[in-house]
Length: 293
Image (tube, rainbow, N blue to C red; front, side, top):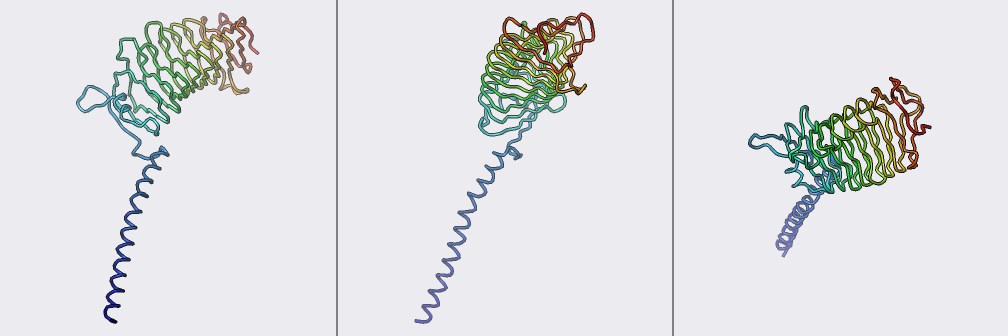
């Protein structure tokens, strides 16, 4: 009887250990899974950073091909090398960052019929350090999107189209970008309460104006050169607002260097222009039209 009790206790002990091991294994699996998901959600995980090389060589990829396989609700960073000949549509993404390695380009593949990069209905999208060539508009930030552009060169839009369009209640920030040699305006901020903040940029040598602001939109410009454009330097119309410069720091002065570049403020359409007294005009033929407070 005593031997049976000892065996029974031993059996219970073995069962308890086995049960503990089973529970431990069962509980460990979800913890690992959730930890991986949490890291991806934070945007810092290397699992959410993808490196691709564009081009004609076998095995190379396209930005569009990678986007097609991503969950648009999760944060992703794509680092791009090479020459991407494609028209990239970013639709309904949140927390997407595209970063160019040195020399990476995105060039129009539509024959001038589509934007090279078209961002629609998306939030917290970053485009950084690319050279964007051609297209019917180089880059569009549209349909309630929030876009951040940093260190890009956007050039060569054809058929009278603009370098960058911010439209349809979208918001965009520009940090050190160059917008040049486009057949329309350099930057259009229009189509209903759109908002753009331009800092440390160069908007130059576009066939149309440097910047157009219209239809209840807002422009803020700091430390930016707007030079050599075929139309006006900045045109503000249709109940829009433009503010130039911050405080009295000379580094934040806007420069209008060529005779055709000027600030035009459409008084009849209730536009409002404001500067901190730091609009600098280097030639007598530069003009301010309208009221600058």
